[in-house]
Each structure stands twice: as C-alpha cells, then as structure tokens.
Image 1 (cartoon, rainbow, N blue to C red):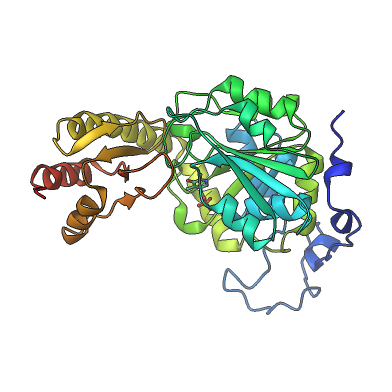
Image 2 (image 1 turned 45 degrees about the vertical axis):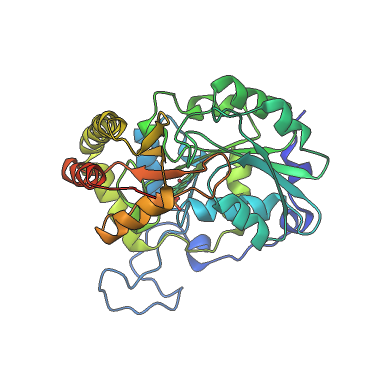
Length: 348
Ligand SMILES: *Cc1c(COP(=O)(O)O)cnc(C)c1O
C-alpha cells in the first residue's frame, strides 16, 4: 500500500511552518491591523491570499478538479522544486526521469543535491517502462515524466504512464504543460485512482500567460498540503492572482479558439517545412512546437538569427542530433520562417 507519510522527508514532516497574519485570521473584517501593511490603498498595499482560494475555485470550475487538490506556484518550476524538496533527502535520495526531456527536472535535482538518473527514450521517443523502473532503487523518491514531451513533441503512451504510476512506490510527476495541444486526454480525471501521482500544468502555454508566472500542480490533498506547508507564504502575488482571474473569466472560449488556431498552424508549418530540401525529418507533434531534423542545424540556426528569427537549437541533445525545435507562431510569423528557410543556401 502506498503511504505518503513514509515518503515525506522527516524534517518536513516535523516542520512547524511559518504562520502568516493571513493564515491566522481568514474571515472578512473592516479594520486590518495585523500584518504591518501600509494602510493607504493603492490596489497592492495588502498581502495576497496565501492559498489563492478564489483563483483555485475558478480553476475548479473550469477543470475537473477539486480546489483542495490544487497547488499554485510561481511557474511550474516552483512546483518542481517543492516536490523535490518535500520528498528527496539531499545527498541520499535520487530522481529518475527520461532523456531527452525538459531541463528543469535535472537542474532542480542538482540544486538540491539529489542524484538524477535518466533513461533514454526509444528511437521513436517512447518510454521504455521496464528500463525506467530498473533504474529505480530504495532511494528513488520521484519519477519525472513529461507528456507531451519537450523537446520531442510526442505524447508518451497512456499504458506506459499508467504502468509507471502503478508499479513505482514513490511519487510520479507527470508534466502536462502541453496537454491542451494534444490528442491525448489529461490524466486529471484519473488522479483519484493514483495517490502517488502529481500532475503539472501551466498558464504559460495554451493559456497565453507566460508573463505572470503561474503553474499548477494537481495531487492528493495530502501531497498538496505538504507543498503548501513548505512554500513561501505569499508565493503568488496579487497582480498575478488578479490577472489570472480576469483572463479565466473572460476568455475560456478565446483560449480554445487560440489553441485550435495553433494546431491548424502546426499542420500548415508541418506541410510547408516538409517541402524544404534542408529538412530531413519532421517529428509529429502533440504540442505547440515541431522538432525538425535539418541538414546543418547550427548553420541554419545562425542563418535564422541573422534574419532575426529565433528558434531553439537542440542539436546537442540526446536523440535530437541535427534538430531544431520550432515554436508554432502566428500565420505571419510561420510564413516569415518558411520564406527565410526557402532562401537558405547550404553549400559546404
Ligand atoms: C514550458 C514548460 C513548462 C512551463 O513552465 P512554467 O514555469 O509554468 O512557465 C513546464 N514544463 C515543460 C515541460 C515546459 O516545456
């Protein structure tokens, strides 16, 4: 039986968390003299709600999730860091993940002095669950999976994710940053089945709010409680909370139409890139970017830079040799890119 209490670090379990003024009094009052704030109103003179209840309720009305199973972080990066700090003992425990994938899992592990192990995806970028599980030992506390995966763009199979979550006796973090662009369904509705699953989503991609730094983690109430216990008290500032509420109220339809436009543009970009002589292979994408194998990635990257078009050079990444990662832009941006690539001349 999976028991969260045996997984949480001892010092975290025993931690007496900081109790803020807003933790100790939560109702509505007319005079607030408890937090040493400046009393003159300017819209931001008060501390924000430390648990972002209104925003979580709003998210709960849009996604199939109970608000008490939501953690909000200063970007997904905060959630990644906190999950590591909650469960991994520095210098002792380890994390297992896939390769290639999003770089922050490894960086956060390194910052926290946690050993990071990874297993190569197959040549078609799929997860070898057996190889992954074989990398784990008694000190493996977290497995990080990313689906759709960055930078490969494909989704991992539902079966391979499910088998990982059910066979591993630790936390599985499933990063769904690109789920809104995918054919595949989110694991959100399966959360109740898996007490060791943490799902990450973000407002940075489909929701178009990378600038406000807001990431979500969905998990059991116990896991969410642990993250809340160790986060900075006021981790999501008032401007971010208000902007997110505003956007969520006015634009679920708008978000849906933006996403379907990006998916259409992805198809256009795919078809048009495929026509180019410099493109050797395009990997199919379930995300808002395309991984393209080209004849001379570094040269084409530099050529595009000269034209003030910036893509991501992933040619030094395992299994992505010779590849550029291209984000799907607006119709005009995508046309500009393709036009520039039509004119590239590679003669060695
Ligand atoms: C972009 C991205 C995120 C989002 O990170 P934020 O900190 O929320 O902006 C998370 N995971 C992956 C794999 C990403 O590519």
